[in-house]
Amino acid sequence: MRFILASASPARLDTLRRAGIDPEVVVSGVDEDALSAASPAELALTLAVAKMTAVREQISQPALVLGCDSVLDVDGIAYGKPGSAEVAAERWRAMRGRSGLLHTGHSLGGPDAVTQRTVTTAVHFADVTDAEIDAYCATDEPSTVAGAFTIDGLGGWFVRGVDGDPHNVVGVSLPALRDLLREQGFALVDIGYPVSRR
Image (cartoon, rainbow, N blue to C red):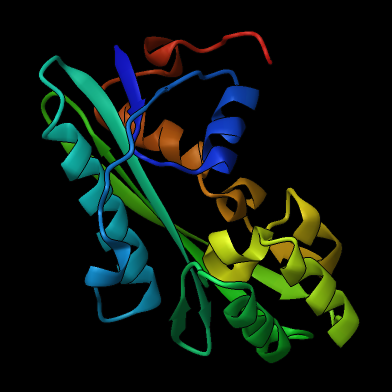
């Protein structure tokens, strides 16, 4: 079965490849800032569904299309991609030494059905210094990722721990994706598992 990742995220693609899946990538083009929802968790799923739907409408052959989106929830406020080093630094000064919830919405559109799930992982941030924040934000990494941090890149130094699925923090929960496939009657082998690691 053709398997398509409706995401421009290199981290999601790398996670899937390291786990033995090599999806096609079709970027949805969804304007994330144009969508809203009642809560950060609902926003993550709304964005994931929008991405999956946009790509699914472009595909003529039967396929499984996975849309994902992540949103950091700190005190009920949704934080997506900061977009600039200045905004990223401001967020880090507000969340250092605290914890947040990273919600990742997953929407899998198949030939006959759509299955979806939001997975939440608690993230505990270190009490980083102003100098560390400035150095990290100058790399531009936090400007382009939900919540202004990564655990699999330069930001890993500043995450004290997570409670829940660590892959979810990177952008795709592997156990959730397996469950979504099974709910539609598919198995990992149907989407090419396992391919050799790159």
